[in-house]
Image (spheres, each protein chain N blue to C red):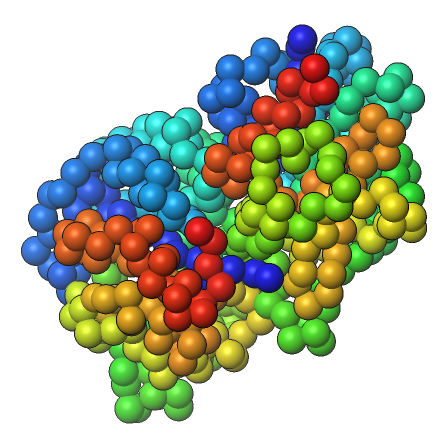
Amino acid sequence: MKIGIVDYDAGNLRSVETALNYLGADYFISSNQDDLIKSDKLIFPGVGEAGYSMRVLKERGLDNLLKDYFKSGKPIFGICLGCQIVLDSSEESNTPCLGLAPGISREFSHSMGLKIPHMGWNQVKQQGKHYIFKDVPDSASFYFVHSYYPELRLPEYGISSTEYGITFTSGFSVENLVAVQFHPEKSGPHGLKILDNFIKGLD
Amino acid sequence: MLQKRIIVCLDVRDGKTTKGIKFKGNIDIGDPVRMAEDYYRQGVDELVFYDITASSEKRGIMIDVVQKVAEKIFIPFSVGGGIRTLEDMKKVILAGAEKVSVNSAAVLDPDIISQGASHFGKQCIVVGMDVAADKGKPSGYGIVINGGRTPVDLDAFEWAKKVESLGAGEIVLNSIDADGTKEGYELQLTKMISEGVGIPVVASGGAGTPRHLVDVFKKGSADAALIASMVHIDGYTVEGIKEFLKKEDIPIRL
């Protein structure tokens, strides 16, 4: 079992790496699509700006890698920006994105009386029982830091929701793709459990 | 619902933790990596490492500390102290810190805030503000730099609005007057700044009992509270403080 981590200069790459080391996962970090396509599972991390990040992905041919990987049926885990970029588009710099999941990344509004970014620990209410939440209590808190949130066109893909002014989708799953808006690599033992669940999968 | 955060601050000099009283007479109290692990196990929400190393040749030690912390604790942490350039920021972020904190350097060169935000994202850039009461300033509070020693010609409220507009993702608001007193946070100042900006505000300086944290969340509208000597020296645990806050209906992660 080899986990590939997509390197596109995203901000939390190092944190994901240290968490995987701690979990004893067999992984490699790469920006090379020929190497990444050979992995058994893919982690698509991300902290950054959507427009810039899509440009970097395209320059490295990683936009096509992600689309091919999705079609291959092998598991993909998107984290934070990685959860927004898999949607059709983002309101951030009006960026067309990968279109693996039907939806758009919307901006939180100060008009809702909210502080932005949404930063800190917030509760994640599970919908259904996705395998990445195995042995994770419902409504446990996870660490968020983001100014945009995923809005699905088909809400039935949602696996969790979180409240911040509005109720937004904080996790979703479309076929072999699962994505979360929070940072499991920075959410203490429950976050590590989610990463471990993805690594170990359904077996 | 978004929880209020408890942040433990560790002052580090030459790779060892200290806690200062009114920024003077620091005493050595331990190994920052081991202390970070202890607080992580107790359920702290976030950590801040403040590098007070005086000599530039020993600054590399801090990067080593940051790397070791990043390997062992899986919650966000920030690093401040002596960060003046994009290169300084890059070093601590690559070592594994989520956020960098600039203080005096931002007062002397506000562009560092916008440069940092555009390179690393605004969520990475924390601006630390050392504030002292000053009747001569419009808001009644002024900014001081160099560890609280030097007043500058800046109104605290105007500076907070300015750092927000330059791209700061968070403000750590430290009251020089309350710091080290253990008599409670400066509630009036915290409320004014926290309700006046659209980014999270971390209250700092003055915490002596869990009641002080209740007050700064309820009356001071703080998004997070920084504590240090309460847990380093006075025998409180993060768990105990959180249980107290929960009983007082403060939304907190247990």
